[in-house]
Length: 121
Image (tube, rainbow, N blue to C red; front, top):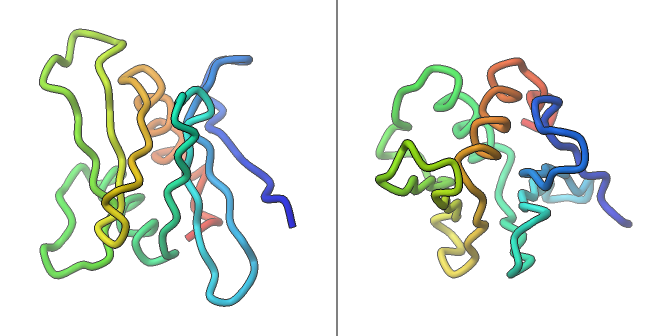
């Protein structure tokens, strides 16, 4: 079954952005990708890890250290550069890294804060 990908409504039309999908099979999995990522990486995680990411982004607080698996977000140290890379990876599959940029990450975070992805968790 082909997943139905959803991006944030804050993402400009036609622009590549972070996309989220789910597989309804058991165990249920959440998938994240960046349509413009040249590696084509798809990060697969649990609904619990995705819910933790959503909560972290909504409350702007780090997740508890005891939470595993986790989605780790690494932001480049140059916040004024919209093309600075942002990397997402799961602690259970650290070799899979989804790469986006700050502008697209910001669009995703705005969508998270608006509740656009709550139904995935």
